[in-house]
Length: 580
Image 1 (tube, rainbow, N blue to C red):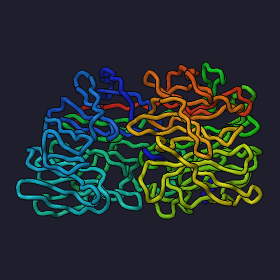
Image 2 (cartoon, rainbow, N blue to C red):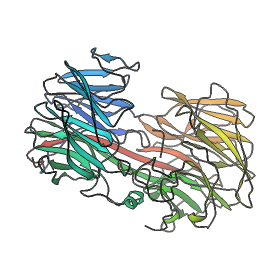
Image 3 (cartoon, rainbow, N blue to C red):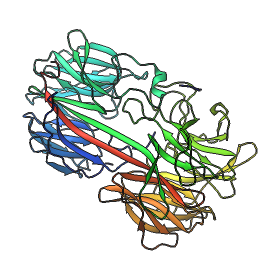
Image 4 (tube, helix red, strand yellow):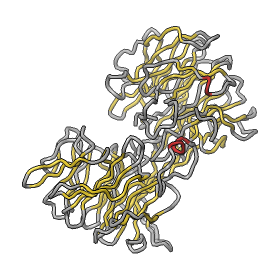
């Protein structure tokens, strides 16, 4: 266990920004958007038309078609995939059909050769290979790991592919599509595992790809909450695999494309903080930089929160928990200190009403792992006696799959949490109650809370401070969500439908009469309050950022929440400046 030193993953509507005037490094921002989500869509990809006039920008949740010269955008919410076949826009609808009609399987990311005579893609369900299709048939080319990126050489005779292994490192390979020969260009790369794009220079002698470092990182480093491991763009010399930094800027450079003599890439910049505001509403003040998912101690004098940079290579392996002391006005009076430290993802704990126990979701692994599903990783509810070292934590469950945030019953003898059914349909979380021996911390049994239709899936839940009743943020499917009360006997009542594209969050006031929640309004997440009996919600915040995951203080006077700022950009500069 480390003593010193992970989410079902919808993006938001975008606001185009005109291109900036090139600076001294001749870099331009072609397009930018500010997300109103938590982490979803944080790592946008890019596809360029052959003539460089249009770009497909975003993630698979939602894409934008961007005019490169004007920076104007056209949302493409109804499609599941969109790319270019030369200059022709090709898209796939929700039924898996491609338009214009092309003979391709559903759920693949096709790349056409420069002369459009061949198409390459990673087969769905067989991601350690590339399939190439042309008039002579189709062929599979095996790669040394799961393929995360591929691109054609300028002459259309070779493919370059980036694939990653279980140890978290990637290999850049060259595939001769005629002979089937696969050659390694360079291995041991510190590249992202998630799908992205790479660029090839016009003469085919250099490749451009995102890396977190030039070397192979120690697996331990992936678990550090805050280290310099954001992605930069590196130039790779094909002849010998030599690396050189090409773009290094604040934020993460994610995906790369080359058209003619121009290098294009996407950049993501993410800021998060814990803020507090009066429970009656108003302006929020800062509690802690770099935090998310707050929770109050029973005495109201401490606030715990999750820390860890949102980085493409490691998150959420690097999530730990800090705690900060606050005064009666919810203002910090000391520096944050570490509360929960361990390998893999840790979420903010909920204190028991008497302050004796902490309950939290963790993917605890016995040692450092290189990836989210690394060997030995868990996905369950853990208990820790207040003041004890993390080495003394108790694993309460052994059946979790994407367990969410946890809350205590008023009597402090039960816990409520939600989890997917392991082996069942992903993305459908149902509520459970665990009974505890509060002396030993051992579980005494688990019961599933009746979850009647039309309730579909729990995003976030909170236990009423005065009754055996849960407040539920329900994922209705198709991007719709709603707020409900749910008795432990299954008696459910809808309070309000909301717009939300992430885990919005909710909590009760101490008297159990009001539920505070977050919802989308005017392209930002803001806080609202609604009576338990229903009625019209009242907006509490008009913040310039997105405010979500609220928690009400024990005295009912303050609300802490997570403030998120997530900006994504499409960039370009001359390839000469990029060191080709």
